[in-house]
Length: 104
Length: 454
Image (cartoon, rainbow over all chains, first blue to last red; front, side, top):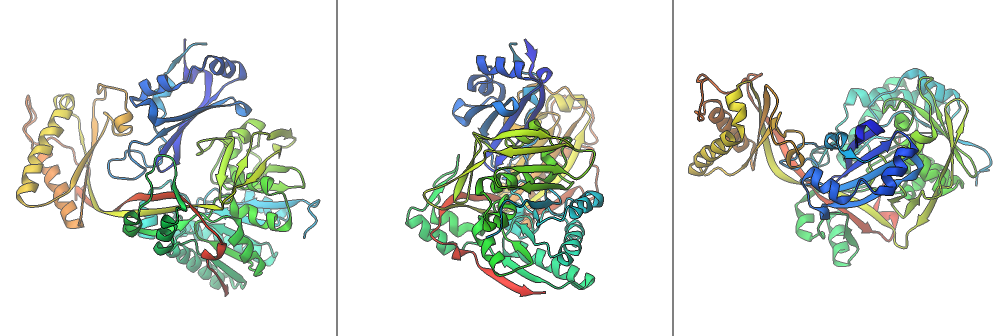
């Protein structure tokens, strides 16, 4: 088991719209990517537990071969900039992924 | 029709007009003899306030600086200049703001040209009729649009496609300022008009709208060049510290999108399933295989916000371990005390505590249960129907928290370190996104074009 950050070169979050938060995980190389893709290590169950959300609030998880990336999009609990929001750009919601344990 | 065997060069100065660019990079682009200078000036990223208030999230000095270089270099050389989503949000007040800056520069520099203005605003009645005719559908995670929501919304705009921009090009405009526009459209309109492939033009636009963000190292404040040919396009850095790589270019398809294989836009979707990237010397990348699949119906994304009231905030900190340990209970008690006061005075409103060190950044998504920081930051936020009421709620909440006698308290002189005097700040109007839907349109006449000789 390794931390996701140890095998990734990019882990980031950002709004995909004012109502969606999207996460990009770009792996360091194809070997890691292929293993994660084959085992579907990043799946709705893992993400729902990590962020304490319902699986229904997670959109498709897309494995993007051209740059060895995994993309996940979630429903925002509060739309960008509405009262109670904490991160208008959605750029600082990635940190729990850094230490997510994945099997390599 | 142009000869599309000839290369078509597009200079993208910066990711957002006003974010700046090194003059050397920009001039390297000018020396390439570009056929178009285009830039995106907007985004919904900064939140609903800017569309609602009619103000720009970019600074006038920054926007004027960028535009001055574009106009000075472009006008004399007869290079068309196209700006999209003017003023940040692209409604009429934003477009007027940008136009005034262009006019100021023209006066100061003695420039004259034909200016085209494209309005992206959509009349409420048009939206309500579209609802009645079942021509509006919600985007992911939104409810069906109702006429009530439309009535409450302000500054409704559509992300226009290439068609209105092509209309302005046909009117021989030298400079085109567009209201809210689909980001790639300002780059793709002219080449599509000249006969270049729409898929390649749109994909190139999609990358150029972020300027050097897709390069390595990435930057939102540096210029790049796009070179469109008959069956591929090339990305070329204009700053020797950057290069495009196959990976950096492919990775850009992920950025701020929910699906990197299919990017829906006005009138069609960009299909990137068969795209290939080829590394060229000097940090250049060649891209081919992008396709634009026209949709059966022409949809535009419409955006609108509603005003919820006014906000006031107070910023404070605590370094007391007893207070930090009990912060959740303390906030609960303070909320109850304040609610009693507001109730007795007939003041309505909402209070939000942003506790940095606990879950100030991630809110409900925060997995950490315990506070491990030696100090915490507290932002008290109040929202109410008037600025006065918001101020009152904020101040009463701050003073209650400041002197609240929580269980186990040893520090009895005050619970908060307040960095500023005044400690409580009126923060103005509060908006929320209310419209983020697709609207089917029958013709492009919705978007008015005005031509002005400058």
